[in-house]
Length: 288
Image (cartoon, rainbow, N blue to C red):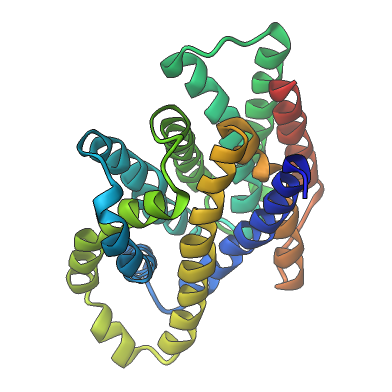
């Protein structure tokens, strides 16, 4: 199989997994609050990664730990809290559309912090993409029913952190095995997840909420597929191609998110598709 074909197949697989993540977060929030969702998501994934981390520990160089900390915190830790906070007020469809800003922030940060140069066409693409996101947040409220669309800004902040993480991987951890990278990044988050587990009183929720075990099942799927498996695959894709190509999975994730939102009874309007079109045109222009 050629490198190009392999890259695109991996991209499609990631799109399906991550496009489903917003729906899984929505279902997890039935029983758990956003901080419980984040703690459980990180904790389950970290425990899944732990055996691999212990096996790969000897391969990690001393100077790489600081970059692994950045990737763990910005690429998984903080966004795991921001997305469920946002989805207490916005639909999974809207969250999925806004997440497609990731490649735009990846490019902007590559320019501002990593010395990448861009053409005028790229800058126009960035402006169009951000315009689409702004329009969706500011003018979309009447189209999406109840809720506060300004919570979509938490998704935007999450995209910024994803962009920082992707650029860090490409610049400083390019030659590290993807499984080593993922397992180390999540192992460093395990103490925070355990603290969150007890601090937010997850055991009490498990005993008192009638939907707790069902939501935990959705969370397990979110952690093991959307976090554990997809993290390894994403870092592998970054190393196989580059940070901008890997982040372009956001072309496809909003389509999956919109489809699942529709099937789950969410109100999908013209504004969803118009904003998604602007963002994806912006992503396309920014990459050309």
